[in-house]
Image: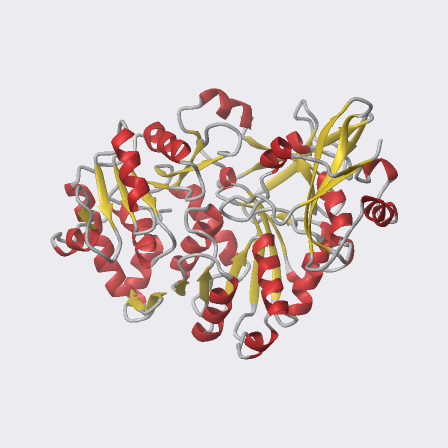
Length: 516
């Protein structure tokens, strides 16, 4: 398989069909293919040879999609930059990967210029904005206009396609090496379940640097559907785009779903003017969702088919899928069953599979599993054992093969000798009518070793004393799992895709109410 495969196919069978719409810009597949081939030619002129790394530091855009295709067309390797990271983390990822060319937009041109002065490897900055080209940078459109289209380098199969950095919240990030086969096979899993088919108008609401968005990008090119792009997630913009562009499908992290539902509740008059009837499929993932939020979303969009995707960057990223027909009863708490090309099992610390219903670590095997971590052989050896990717996620599997996520192994709370999965407590807390968002962590306790601590964001006008929260939770979970402390915040720290950063919460936890 190869990343440019879908583009080649669509250029031949649907050259005049719309490939991408971004704001007031539109490209057919024929036009997109020509620009990609010319940009690839420009990258070759800049010294990009087979296997060389090219970074993109940008908001979502039409040019981001061109980057995703032109780099492999030129024989290069993708290195999408996490726009939420600090300059130190980004600089580390650039130099660690040996990136030599970085493409930047208007939002990040100043930050990029500063980083390049410190970088040991970046030789060229390409400006992909709409203003005047900054001094010392090359102009993206000029490079395309002055370059002849070149033949596809046809990097494929086990060749390295991209280095996707992850884990920047706990020390310096790790570069996950994914091959063309890894990414292609993972994309096929979406096509098998009928997602991203030819008639789809897919909205890119998640950030394009993240694999959660990159995966459907590859799937959609394979089928020949239409990419609808917005610069970044903002509830009103997203909903207006769905209405105007007749979007049929999108993917969101739970926090983005929460923000969307809150906007609809807070702006009923504006919401009434929107026609969202074209939306027929919504996939959610990137972090666990509370049952309360899921039920609220299904009530707001009764005619939309909901899918859950569980995975991680190391799985390129699809691991398990929960279909619409499984969104009922106890299965609402499940992450799904292993995707078509994936095997999954639950193992003990020695790697031995445990009986169904027993908690352990989730491991996965298949052609989507990463090649390894860039320049980190010891980390790779820990994660990849006997062909199985050890996810670091705790959970269990039922007799029908449905996987239930407990927690990151490192996030499990051990209080008084008992294991507590924070996700279970979060589901209980989130069910309180006054809670808008919540996160549960373990904090040090002289008596218990760790105690369960809830960080909550309340709905407007709501109040919630700890005693009331504990009474509410006791009706739903065991007493030892009930939060012993809490604090109320106006927001939770989140990553670029809306995943709550529990590492940050642990560093800054400040209980306002506590019981021993």
